[in-house]
Amino acid sequence: MTRCQEQIIRSRSKTFCRSCSSKYPVATVSVILSLFPKFLRFTSCLTVALLAFAFPALGNTRDLDKEIEKTYLNSDFARTVELLERKTEELRKTSLGNQKPSFRELHQSRLLLAFIYAWKLNEPQKAAQIYNELIQHQGVPDTKGKMPAFEFLFLADLHQHQKDYPSAKRHYHLFLEHLTEFRKTENDDVSIILVDELTRFTKYQFDTLVLKTAKERPSLLLPELRLVSLMTPYVAPFLSAATAPAARYETSIAMACGLAPYLEKSTTDVGSMFLGYSLLLNAAGGKVEESSERAFEVFLNKYPDSYLALSLANLFYQYYKESEQPEKAERLREEINKTADRRRMNLIIGPDEMFSSPERTWETYRKALMTGDLDLAISCHLPGDKKYSEIFRLMGKEKMKEVADKMGPIEKITGDATMAKYRITRDQDGKEITYYIYFSNMNGEWKIVQY
Image 1 (cartoon, rainbow, N blue to C red):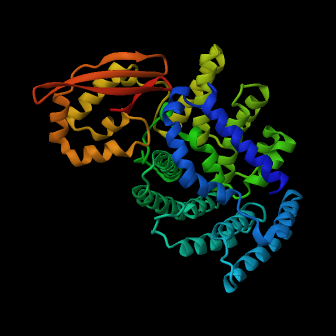
Image 2: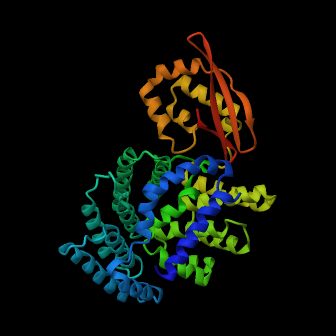
Image 3: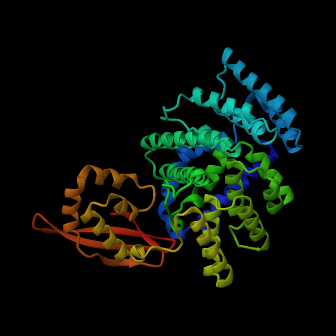
C-alpha cells in the first residue's frame, strides 16, 4: 500500500468517525448509536465492496500502480492512460494462467481510465465506450451480489455536460430502474439507505434536466425534499468511494493545496462532486472554521442548486442556528428558499411537527395506520428499515386499521434528549401484555427504532 493510499484511508476513517461523534455536520449522536450495529453489519457486505473498489489490491501490478500514481499526480494523463491500458492487459492475461484476475481491480482500472478520458483529456466518446462495455460485462439488470451499475450514472452525467439532454435523461431513467431492482436484493438497513439516497439524488438530477427543457410547469420526480431527513452525510464516504475512481489521488492533491483551492480547480463531474462533499464534511467535522466556510462557499458556487449543495447548506444552517449565529443562518435559509423557487419544488428545512416528540410521532404513526398511509407510517421509523414496510404491505389496509384501533397511548419509562423508551399495554386473551417502543431523536425528529 502506498503512502498516498494510507493517507486516504486515514482521511476516510476520520470522516466516518467524526460523523459518528460530532454534533456537526450530521444527525444527533442518538441516531448513530441506534444505527451503529447496522453500520457494523454493513461493513461485512457493501462497505467491503466499496472500499475494495476504491483501494484495489495491487497484486502483480504493484510497480505499475506506483507509476500510475506518479504520472497522475504530475498531471501527465496521456502517460497515465498508457499505463492503465498496460495494466488492463496484464490483468486480463492472468486469466490464461493459473491465477484468476481481480475483477474489482480490473473494473476500477477501467473506471479510472474512463474518468481520465472524459474529464482530463476531453475524449468523452472513449469514456462512453468503456462505460458501455462495463455495463455489458456486469450483466445488468442482474444485481445479486454485485455493486450498483454506477456506469449508468456516469453516462448520464457525461451526456448532461455535453448538453445531450435526451441521452442524459434516458440514462438517469435506466439508473433509477436499476436501483429499484437492486434495492429488492438488499436486506441490511444501511445498504437500503445508500440506495435510497442514490435514488433521491438521481431523481433530482433528472428534474434538473426537465427544468432546463420544459416550456410549461413540469411534473417533477422529486417535487418535495425534507432536508432534515437526508442521510447523505452518513453515506458520503461510501458514495465518494464508489463514484470517484481517482479518489486516492485527488485526496492527496486536496491535502497538498488546501480544500478551497482544490475545489476551485477540480472537475465538475458527479464523482468529483461527491468527493468534494465528503472532503468538506471531513474538514468541518470537528469545528466550522474560516477555511471550511471558504470551501463551503466554493462548493456552492461550483455546484449551484445541486442536491449536495442543498445538503451542505442545511447542515451549515443547522450549525449556525445552534451556535447562535443568526445572520449566517438566515442568509442560508434565504438561499435555500431561492433554490426552491428556481426549482419549483418544496424544500422543507426544519423538523416536522408531526415528529416533534415521541408522543406526536406515535400519534402520527397511529393515524397513518388507520388511514392506510403506508408511506407516512414508514416515515415514522428510522430510514432504511425494510422490515416494517414488508409487514405493512402483507397486512393490507384493513389489517393495518385493525392494529391501529388497538394502539392506545404510550407511557414514558426513561429517556433524554436523544433516546427514549416507552411502553404500551394491550389486552390479549384476557391478559395485559406490555410492549416496549424505542425512539431516537434524528435532527429534532423523533423516529421509532423498534416496536
